[in-house]
Image (cartoon, rainbow, N blue to C red; front, side, top):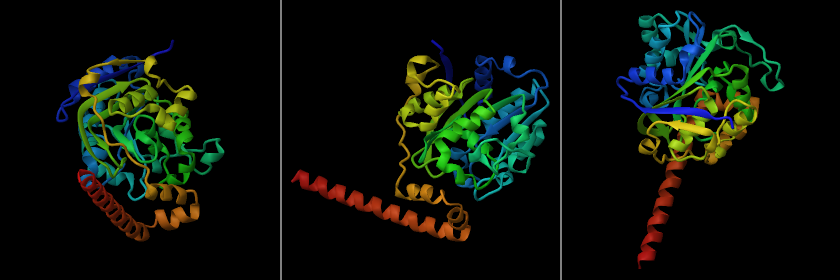
Length: 336
């Protein structure tokens, strides 16, 4: 029976470098990255909002530790991200401290949205070329954050590559989301994946949830196994995540519990996170994203979007308050 190994270690969020080194060594990284190989590193930099950086984006301390280690092997290291719907990648690089770190370590920083693009022979991807630098790298290291996700249940080592689709309006591809995540990963397979669980996210992830302090790092050569392990670590069932199942079906890795070897203090660090609920507002957004016209004129229209978001959050708050009031009255009635 084919098996995959996932490693988990407790880590100091202020100095994760020793644990990063151990995890890379456990994964046999020297066999994966030859001397002077071209290595692309993809952190998850999904926001430039200062108040959300700590739990939504890959920790700078983890990214630095990975880049320092890789620089011992090669001088050709590139940190990449694509433009977001409401911010350029450069804003996320700046807000997270990536530019400063890159200058100190001598690594390259690249906005995939500005790179030479290679068209993909897939009708779903027409007009959505992929970065030549990313596709042609000798090795690819993905550094996701352990987070819940309101549409995909979980976002980790596989979903992080959604950010390698370099158009800011990639939400137009959400109608293919669950299968396309795996298919994009198949085009440029992950060499090694390290998941940042120092501060993860629970609730309405991947951006609007709240922190979950795990103080752990996880790593594997198998991104499917890593996501499955990360989900189980916070009380989620990998079978509920359609893109994890699809990625396994097309041969990118293994998610079945009986096929995974879990190395580390799993029982000690496991917890139960608040899942992300695909509520009515998320469902409406996903429905709207099926239309190019509505996506560009509503979802990507900042003037209109922020007004609608404030109204939506007000309705969410009112609904939540009403539920609490009804619950309190029901409890009072039962006590009588």
